Length: 141
Image (cartoon, rainbow, N blue to C red):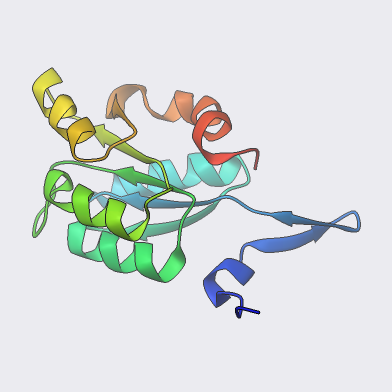
C-alpha cells in the first residue's frame, strides 16, 4: 500500500461524521493584491488556497501541494504563464489550469490552450465566476 501524501492529508476534514476532501487551488500571479482578492473569493467558497508569485514558484508549489485546480496569470517575471504551462501540465496532468490575464488577446489565449490550459478568462470578470468554475473544474467544495 502506498503511503498517503502529507500535502493531501491536509486537505481532509471530518464533517458530521463524514470524511470530506477539500478542494485545493493554486493561485499563481505576480501581483499580491490579485492573489489576495482571488484567495478571499476562493476561501469564501470553502476552498483551501496555496499561492505562487511567478512560474518557477508555481511549479514548485504544484509539486509540493498537488492542487486540484490551478489559476495561472500570463504576465509574470522570471517565467511567464505561457512558459510555465507545459511543465505544469507534466507535473499535474489531470488538474485543470485556468489562465487568467488582464492583458491577453485572443491569439494569446489560443496559445495558452495549445500549451495545456483548460480555459482562459479575463481578470476583470473572474471573481464573480468562481462559484461556477469550482462546480465545473474543482468539484463541490
